[in-house]
Amino acid sequence: QLRLQESGPGLLKPSETLSLTCTVSGGSISSRTYYWGWVRQPPGKGLEWIASVYYNGNTYYTPSLRSRLTISLDTSKNQFSLKVASVTAADTAVYYCARIPVGEMIESYYFESWGQGTLVTVSS
Amino acid sequence: SYVLTQPPSLSVAPGKTARITCGGNNIGSKSVQWYQQRPGQAPVLVVYDDSDRPSGIPERFSGSNYENMATLTISRAEAGDEADYYCQVWDTGSDHVVFGGGTKLTVL
Image (cartoon, rainbow over all chains, first blue to last red):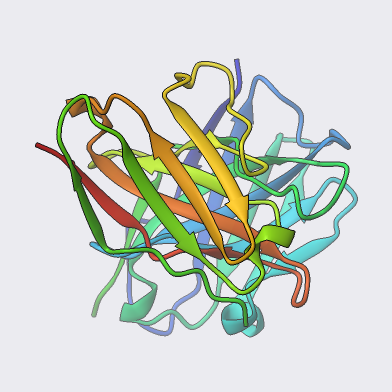
């Protein structure tokens, strides 16, 4: 059974770099049949997709945050990670990692399995 | 960039049908997904590719998509259906994911 587990610092200061890791069990991140992605949700607000990565290293980023984001795979640990540079209070959110099956068309793009989420607070 | 518009809230009586809408320019040409998020929990996929249901999702949940509006229909609403519901598409024009703002469904 697939399980995704996020881990992160919990609290960090403005201008620092946020590092998040998603540990995957019950499935391989090297599979050609899935993308792996991150979605965040500020307190009391809606969902925001951040980034996705494919097994071959192809990356996709939300345009508004592209310059501050890095998503990557660590196949040796079956993990994928997200870094967000120069954080501000606006980056305070619950961060979810998720699995996206590869469809016949790119338009068929959905988050089929989610982690439980990790709260990240940016505060001085 | 592409915008998805959902009503902020909707109320439905137990046993009745709730229809949650998601508006977007020519959304009928896109594949629409729907997620249910109960308070304090991660989102759960309830409909994908406009009208398909993942295994384990009750048949009471169905989806449709035509022209400029996609709809999630919840039949015979139950108290357990109270949640936030989000629609989502892949915007091929800019190669990124777009979520709607979410609809809070109240069953009372």
